[in-house]
Image (cartoon, rainbow over all chains, first blue to last red; front, side, top):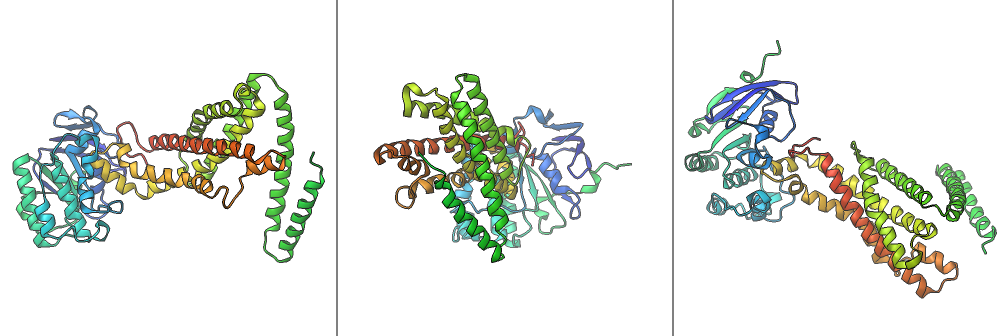
Length: 206
Length: 252
């Protein structure tokens, strides 16, 4: 799915990776650059590389907005300061030009109501609740690759299991896959992620 | 005819106040002194320059004067924006020139019709527009650049969802526009109730009838509002392009 040779991260590290699309859990210590790698994978920063192929085509051959909607990066924390309601937050991407004339892949109103996520203004939701909404919103956009940057970190285990069920459903019906980065995380066994250490991707400077 | 007495009395008053601040240890006397001397010298110099300019009939002399005024304004805005970025001066110059030069012609035509091309009418109008728009641009741009850096993660998360750079920064852009325009809007709201504007005051003191002075002031304020909005919108648009590349990747 990805063939990456000598991708220069902004922290000076160079990455080599051939990824066949197997759902992967990328682990590494704080500050090793795994989040930075995900952001570069999502084409959010300008960077140099020798080869960067996604679905056998170079990154430049993909329209940037379409590429980012397919290889969708989910940050660890979503700010909701600009939103007055949860619906406004959930519907924001549908105001973008890219998603005009598209329909959401899922309607997660059942989970949103079950977990009473509309009871408070978005700014007053807990970190975990904001993360849940971010994941659900991302799934409605039909990404092909979901890049999850510690987005499960603050979610309690009961809700995490239900979210994982939805993620498995998305993988099955939309043939989506994911790369998750975190230090260490438990409760993700059902996702059947291949565990990989970030340092294995980093080119040895010598 | 104004005699020097008109300046001597206010000058004596400011001198007395400056001495007072010195005796009271308020550390304002230097600022008062420098600001007063600079203002007097700059305005005397301006009077000589304007006298000379107004006597010129060459079109290109007017163009040079307009360019110098706009360059000065663009530099001034650059120095007031705390989070400066490469290209800021050029963006300011383009924003001011593209919006205020045609607007000054339009204003000259609206106010003076067949005399619109006279330098003595066009330059003061452009000066008023530049002076006001300069504040709007520096406030709006300062807010935009600061907020963009503070909310980098929010912008990043929107771009990650597939937003274009204009969609991802729409809320910041509009907020900066409101911040930049607020001083002009506030001054318009208070005009005539709390304050008598400078242009109108000058005309009244020169003996113009209030009804004529009011018409001139209304036209001027509407031109200032239009110029500020257009200049600030263009400068924010140009500034935004400096923070992203053609693929919409974040370069700050």
